[in-house]
Image (spheres, rainbow, N blue to C red):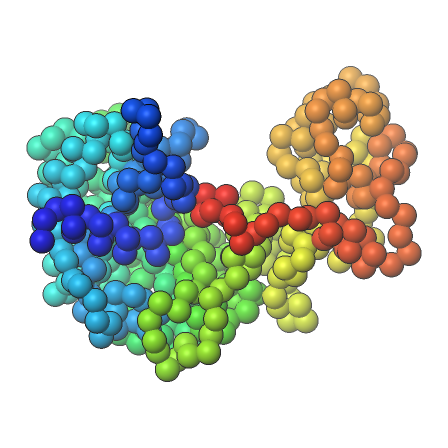
Length: 413
């Protein structure tokens, strides 16, 4: 099998790995233009300074010793198995880079022979790129759960970001759907990575030439919808991961029934809208200081698909509103649906000089389309006057008319 045939297979197999954001673009080069958004394996992610960068996204191999019930590459699934050598991955990366198709590499892999053997091959790719070709571009790799601590550390000194997949939201679903994988083998390296990042971070403040260890941090991915877990189970697991392991991101991959299994029989593909709501809830926890218990509880253990989680929280806590934006602290402004960091900071800065009015907000280019239902502006309320908060819920949900089924992974995450 030639390199192009391998690339087609291993780039296609990598599409189920969402812990590297992808544009989902199908734009092809035409009329002798520049660039090609649909080349197999090209995805897009973001650097620490906010730049969008193109990455070659492939698996090193789609062979695997594990038999996870939800995975298209599971051991018992009959499909063509191919493997890149480290040298082939490096040559592809350098050739794509020289043609300006990519700015970096995202490399994942099935597990061949054992975790340590697979990790050594991944590390070999990074070593060749860094040392032989002096490649300083962005590299994101998957660490293999169960690999030795030394190998995880070696990889962390070579790549920019590392993913260690949690796989499933609960111990119970992991035991049912991926019984050969152990939760300890997954969270242990997460803890080791966190500790190493702290140690190297402290050392760099003292010694300027201390090498960088995962400057772009670590991420993880979990399959949602395969084990019957609730949204509350999912976001509680995410909250724990953020608190315990300092993750940059948790990525959510809706279950797709790509292989037959008695354990997932009858479970349909997870709706993209559910995946989207989980990303929104996740963002509230990461950026708006919400807790899992604020968003869901034992009575409401799944997110309302008809309305975004922030608006849903505000309506469920309507007694806290409306708030006067000329007096409300930053933390309260951040709880207002339709307001984020930018709007909150503009409001706080502007009100130092004068009382804000609706005309002031318009001049500051602050939209109140959704926020007006939850705020007073210099004592004036312009929102929907309701007797039952559920009427407000209906109003907001009907105005939220995005076609979620057409969202790309870039938009959803």
